[in-house]
Image (tube, rainbow, N blue to C red; front, side, top):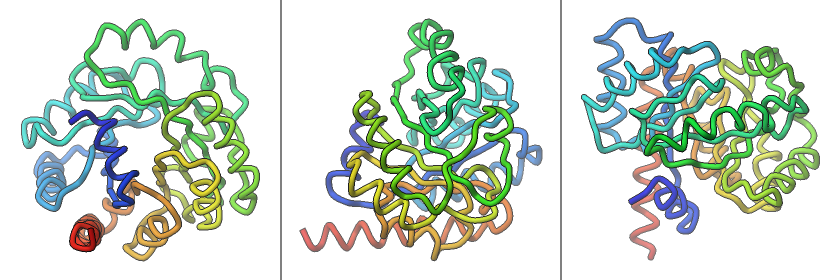
Length: 255
């Protein structure tokens, strides 16, 4: 099954998924890294995202090979912060257009440079509209992209941005409050974007409890992304993945 087929399966049957975002610069302790990967695999994580604002290609290759040595079945997807973060060791890549910003480099500029490189790899390309939402503080994405996020109390603006992304032919939407966000995305934004745009929806940033993950899912997220919250509370990963598994099994029984 391709990554696209896996995502559309969740989307079609309204099942819930969870993704673990790994920034290689934060994982220096090999034992701790192995533990979190093994726990994610054991409890049924859907995908691994690998990326960060300052990573080099060497970092990407090393962490991807490390993940695949532990479990080669679960797809590893690149979540690139810039054009040099491309690795043919991964399974797929989020081909991200930062549609909430107005910096041409992150709307199309770096994509033109990256496209010929990606074409030489077996990576499954996932055209994704990336919408950055204000989390209450400046994040690495704000700084690196030099763009302003959408206000967290403006669902209509987020909806219009998502609709524009769909009309441009993007196949997935990623609502993100940014790494280490002080607050998660307003549930109203998640709800209205999903209702009006109707694309598979990924939501991340500031999800540091099971209740926040459940809220994002309940409002329409197909996948939640866990990152900093797991670093601070490793049990969060188990709680979220176990809940998703139980919820999805209940849908199978109902059908």
